Length: 378
Image 1 (tube, rainbow, N blue to C red):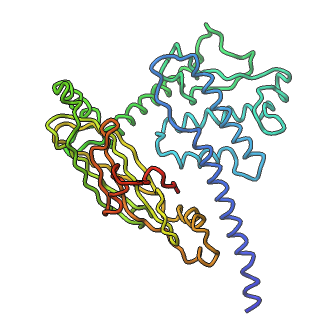
Image 2 (cartoon, rainbow, N blue to C red; image 1 turned 180 degrees about the vertical axis):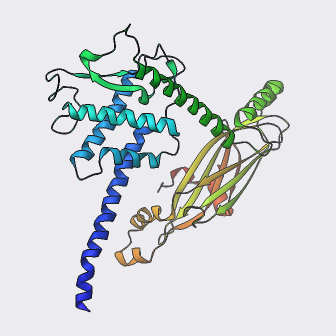
Image 3 (spheres, rainbow, N blue to C red; image 1 turned 90 degrees about the vertical axis):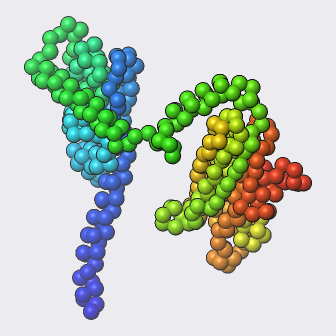
């Protein structure tokens, strides 16, 4: 039995090392993926775009150089893995951008453009042109094809004395590359159109977008004149729409309905508080607060949703507030108390509700010693 256990140790070590290596690669790839986000094609040439592309490319090749100097994955493997975390980049853009970044890193690495710390300097320290410098330029100038003037796929690294002359003719390879850029930009357009089709803007229960609702409210306000400035007749309804579970990501969820019973449009500010209380002292504290400005036409309603943070995120502060012992901390739990909703028209409270009488008292401006505004926020 002892021999079998000893025999298992090398295998366990291999599995452990493999998992650790995969974890490091994923972290490095996720960090790199942040710099590979797609950019909408340029509508016109912006002189500042080249510097932005330069800074972005430097961040990318610095990351590849750091990985190549360590025990991390090679540059080719790392950037391929990074694109696993970018499902918003289509095929042609991925291919062209990946090639551009790897070509820039190979040029920088081969000419010794990184310092001892692995940071790009642009100074040539080995190979051809030692003592000189390298610069970034667009393969296809913006004046020739503006949509690609802000695309990192269109960036290359060359020695300063090899920069494209203003009147230099395109090589056959550059002409071919321009066609690839045109294909990439067309692909971006198709992807954007498909995204708009698959992810239309959110609408209300009547199928109106936020902008369409706003336009209708503005028209109603114009028609109402001074009546639109009057104090509205507002009704609030609220309920606890969810408790901590896998479905709510371990959060409490509150849903509030704001109803304008007036015969004129109005604009109100709605404050929603989700209140908890500590385990031992039962002192109230604010778990979440949402303030929203609501524009409503006559007899229109609006539904508002508010979530707390994850249940466990409140425990340490609540336990500290109660000054619990270690034994008590093991026994304590996070307690949700209720919700308070207050609607203001200008500086005047026009409606308030609570999940129960005590919560409603917190929102009532006439309650003596109302402490809603002074509750601690955990």
